[in-house]
Image (cartoon, rainbow, N blue to C red; front, side, top):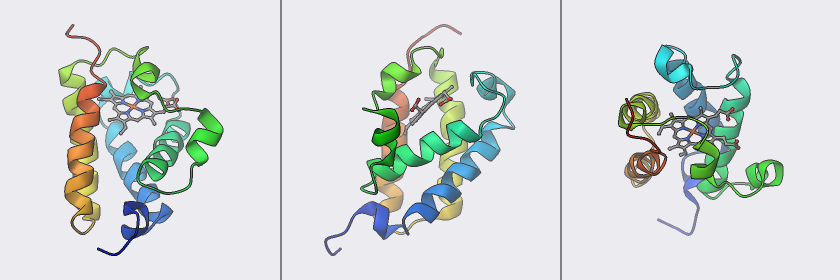
Length: 127
Ligand code: HEM
């Protein structure tokens, strides 16, 4: 692979907009997961996830300009995330990724990243 970012490799912002739209379409269908979100309107959360992922994979740093340092684990502290909730989150993220099917190595890198990052967000063992 030539010197390029994963962001450019998968097609830039368009890819991340499609991914987060598909991801949140699934979140909306899972009442338990959706009930964690403080706002009824999930669009602002969709936008934050999109900007974060764009930045993480080497695109523009608009996320940090708007929100500061990501500190994702800390930002998730208000929401009780147990292993079941992690599974639910991944059950939205991984099929959305499969549908968009970015070419390797991007597909495997993103899949592994989501699995690891979601593990890092678990902050309770309570049911
Ligand atoms: C493990 C299961 C997860 C659950 C249940 C969960 C849930 C939530 C909730 C309820 C919010 C607040 C919504 C809002 O922004 O208004 C949020 C925000 C956010 N989540 Fe997650 N999340 C999970 C994992 C992840 C992972 C793995 C990532 C990154 C790959 C991520 C990235 C974000 C981002 C970027 C925000 C917005 C942070 C901000 O700027 O305030 N989340 N998440």
